[in-house]
Length: 426
Image (cartoon, rainbow, N blue to C red; front, side, top):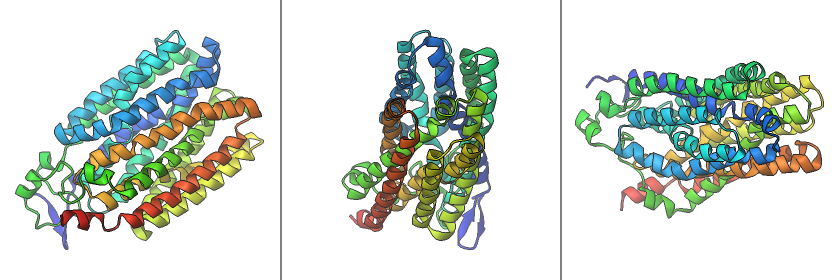
C-alpha cells in the first residue's frame, strides 16, 4: 500500500492533487460558465428586443433540466469511471455555450439550454462533492470549501473579462470565449487528475489504515461501504427535509444570479460596473467558503450553517437598502461571505445522515432542489422587479427562505443521526 499513515489514519498525498483538480474544474464550470450567465441577459435583451424576464427563462429551463438529470449523473459515477463522465460533460457544456453564441431567436436559447443542462448536471453540483467525498475522510469540509471557492474566483475574474468582451465584441463573442475556456481547461484536468482511489490504488485521506488495498478495490466507487441505499434514503423524513431545505437555499441563489441585472436596471450601471457587483460578491464568496469550511471542521456543520445563514441575510438586507455604487459593492461582499452555506454544508449533511454507499445518487437527488428554486424564482423575481420598480423586495424573500433552509437542515440532521447504524444493522 502506498499510503502514508499518521496515528490511526492514512494520509494520502494524492487526495490534495484531486482537490487541486477540483479547484480547476470548478473555475472552468461554475466560475466561468455559471458565474457569468447573468452578464449576458441585458445585452441579449437589448439586441433581440425581448424582456429580460422572458429571456431569463432559458436559464430556468437549463436549471430545471439539470436538476432532473442530477440523480442520473450521480448513478453514472457508480457505473463509469468518473473522469470519463466529467470529460464528456465538459465538452457538452462548453459546446453548448458556443451554441448560445449562434442563437438568433428566443426559442433557440430555450433549445440550447437543454444541451447545456446535460453537461452542467454532472459538473455543477455532483462532480466535486462526489470526488472530495471519495478522497477525504478527514478535513472534508476544508477540501470542499477550497475547491468550491474557485466558483467565486472564476466568477470574480471572468465577469470582468467577459463584461469587457461583450462591450467590445458583443455577447456572441462572449459566449464563444466562455465555451472555449470550459473545454480547454476542464477536459485535461478531468482526464489526467481526477482519478478515483481505486484507479490510484490508494486509500482516501484519513481512512483507517487497516482497510486493505483489496478492500479498497472491492468497495463502492465512493470508497466506503457504509450507508443507506437510494431506496432507503428516499423513505426517510430527513431526506425530504433536506430536499425542501435545499430548494429554499436555491431561491437565494436567484438573487445572486440577478445581481448584474440589478445593477443595470436599478442602479443604471454599464456592463462593467454591473459585472463588478458580481465580482465583489464572488470575492466574498471565496473567503466565505473557506471560512465556513474551517468553521464546519472546528465547530460542526450546524454552527457553520447558522453562521452562514446569518451573514447571508445581513448581506441581502444591505443590498435592499442600496442607493449608491460604493455601498452596493460592500453589500455584495457581505452577501457573498455567507452565500457559500448553500453548497458547503449540504454535502456534509447528506454524508452524515446517509453515508457514502450510494452518496452520488442520493446527493444527486437532493441536488434536484438546488436548481429548482433559482429556476422558478428568477423569472418571478424579474416580474416582481418590473411591477414594483426594483429588486429590493426580492432580497427580503431570499432572506426568509435562507432562514427557513437553515432550520430544515438542522432538523434533518437531528432526525438522521442514527440512520447509518440502523440500516447497516438490517
